[in-house]
Amino acid sequence: MPTKLRLPGRPEDLTFSALLARNAAEHGDLPALSWRSGPDTAAEWTTLTWSEVRRKVAVLASGYAALGVGRGEHVLLMMGNRPEHWLSDLALVHLGAVPVTVYETSAPEQIAHIARHSRARIAVVEGARELVRWEPLLADASVPLERLVVAEAAEAGAHTAYGSLYASGARTHRADAFEKAWQESRPEDPLTVVYTSGTTGDPKGVRLSHRNLVLQAVRIDRGVDLPEHAQHICYLPFAHIAERVLGIYLPLLRASHVMLCADPAAVAGVVRELRPVQFFGVPRVWEKLAASVRAVLAQLPEEQRTAIEAANDLVRTRAAHAERGEEVPAELEAAYAGAKERALDPLLTLAGLDRLVWTASATAPMPIDVVRFWAGWGITIMDAWGLTETSGVCTLNSAASGYRLGSVGRPIEGLELRIAEDGEVFTRGETVFDGYLRPDGTVESAADADGWFPTGDVGRIDEDGFLWITDRKKELIITSTGKNVSPALVENTVKEHPLIGQALVHGDGRSYLVALLVLDAELAPVWARSRGIEADSAAALAAHPAVREEIARAVDAANARLNRTEQIKRYRLLTEEWGPETGELTPSLKLRRRIVRDKYGDQLDALYEQPYDTP
Image (cartoon, helix red, strand yellow):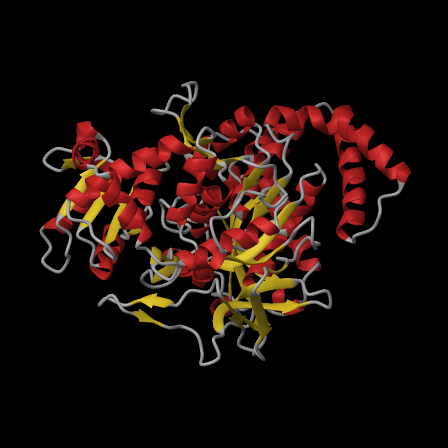
């Protein structure tokens, strides 16, 4: 249900500092923030209540003020999902400063660009691994950076330790100065700058205000049916607008409970432990989770697998009624309840997914086969769509107001959409940013004279008002015959086969399409073992004749569902999974097409070396 908590004013007049003051005063005993110290997943959780959070934020604000941090100043943060990061973010906001989180996977040149562009004097980093990339900037005359604060005291060296900053704040804290500082903030003041993760070119600084994000939080809350004060597992980077909204701003609005997961790879274990009622994952996360479940199913006896598949079909049939807004027939409802209890609930409970009432995805097109897979388990992934520039969500599927699986939903309250002649989606409203940060601190508007912002996404709006995103405008492939092809459509179609985990389609200016395919790292070995195939490496697996034959059948099956222009005529099967560390994915797990094309350019060119005779 939308939060029933009292707001200390109209949403458009609020700041997040005012929401924290309300939480401490009216919900002070409720848990606000929990984390584990160190990598031990068996360690106990440490928890702060909302009143304790505000006291720590006040002390930290005094510590940063003692370093000279002032109103409007940018401060860079590069830490994982740990309390020092979350609390520092709020402390800086209370000073009127502007926290700017930098992805931990950023390359040195990206860090230098952000440090130079933001004009930040201070950066707060985690430890030695980050210092290697940040210390050279202190000696770079083109970068204004003057000081590094280090969260890990043992690794701080000559730099300021976070603990000493906090101790300084405890000595100098004055309650009247703290209250005066945050009360001087205005809704139109900048709350954060989020640098886009950069699928092409240098990251751009998106400046977002308190008003942008308070309204965003309120409007998302109205479209989400959740218990009051629900837990949120916070594992995506705070440099990602989705986690800033879900892990900082919505919890401040709802006085809910943030559970910090420092290692994203450990999130499945945290889900099993906490059994959350809500969970958000980018499409790649849902794909990986689905692959893990499929791998488990492949190990079950045939009789049990058959029962589960029958239950999946029954659950999907019931879900189709709900999707159309129809009443579920009583017989179907009874059959669904029995099948779910007998065949599905035991496995969902083992995975920690049995209590979910809201699941969502955004940031990239969600493969429809993944959506349908989870629908068969009674988990309806409410796909949303938006950009950093729109404060996160523009459109939202909702059980309360209606949804269409495969679409990205209807516009949130107060937001308008229109489709241009070339299919590009434009939007305007109070949650759309004012513009991109310039190096001199001013802002450059990206909207036209009527306030419409071009999103760069291509889509259509159906007769019921649901938006369907087909591709990024700049990523559309235009063949040598002048036909437009959506690479995401082709890639998601071929990835429906469980052996294929990742794909890139190529063919701009060419007469036909080729593809790079990557085996699914979790499911491919399980598939091989179930067929008696021995392979001691990904390369050996990719080279095995049975695997290559199955991949050929997968491509043929995908091509049968695509028109002639969209079909993959040749492909290359790769052995190494793509990721942020190797550069092919952004930190938010989006495909960096240019990087992949550059890295595998010779292999892509080789696929065109022999003429292809169109049948």
